[in-house]
Length: 287
Image 1 (cartoon, one colour):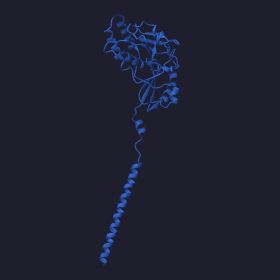
Image 2 (spheres, rainbow, N blue to C red):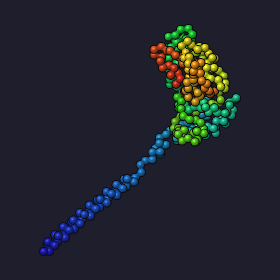
Image 3 (tube, helix red, strand yellow):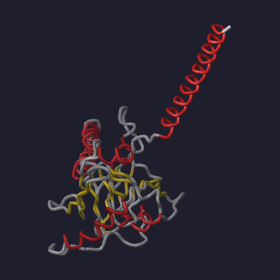
Image 4 (cartoon, rainbow, N blue to C red):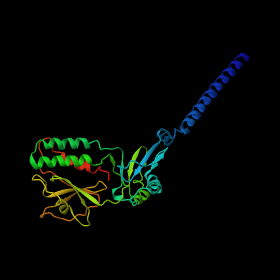
C-alpha cells in the first residue's frame, strides 16, 4: 500500500512538472515573439543621409561665366533652401561685375545636370549630313543652322518650377536636391533667336506684342519651310505651336529670350525626326 502511494505521488509530481515546463516554454515563446514585434528597424532617413556624398550647386547668371558662385551641402537640401541661399549670396558675388544686371529673369531660370546636352552633337551631325543632300540656298541654310546650333549652350535641363513663390508654397515644387547641379539665374534678355528652315538664323531685338509671323520676316524662308505654323520655345522650356499663315493667324505672345523655330515641311529619308530633335534640343538651351 505504501509502495503504491509512493508511486502515485511520483506520477502526480511528474505530470505537474511536465505541465509547468510546457507553461514555461509557452510563456518564453510569447515573450520572444512580443519582443520581435516591437523591435525597431533601421531608420531609412538616416541611411539615406549618410549615403549621400557632399555636393555643390553652382549658381550663375550664365553658363559662359568662368567664375560661378558655389553653394556646398553635406546632406540633401530642398529647392527652397537652394533658392534662398542663392538670393542671399549671389548679389554680393556679382557686386564687382561691370554692367551686371542683378535682377533675375525668373522665366528663364533653369536647373541643369551637365553641359552640353548629349544630343547636341548628333543634331549638328544630322544637319551637316542633310546639307550633302541639298544644293544652293538649301545646302547653305542647313550649314548655317548647324553652325548656329553648335554655338548654343545646351545641357541636360531639369524641368521643375524655379519660381520662388511657387517653391515656397507648393510642396511638390520644393524638390529634394542630392547631387551636383548648375542653377542659372539670368538677367532679363533683350533678344530672341529666329532659326530653322530659313536662309540664315537671326538674333533680333525682342519687342512687346510682336508675334512669330513678324519675327520670321527677319529672314527669308526656304521653299520647303512649313508655311502654316512655327514653333516657339519659351525661356522656361515650354514648346508652343503658333499659327503664321493668313488663314489661321492668331496672335500669341512671345517672351524675351524665346526661340522661334520654323520647321522643314519635307525632309529626305532618314531625317524624318530632325524637326522634333531640334525642338527638343532648343528647349534645353541655357540663357
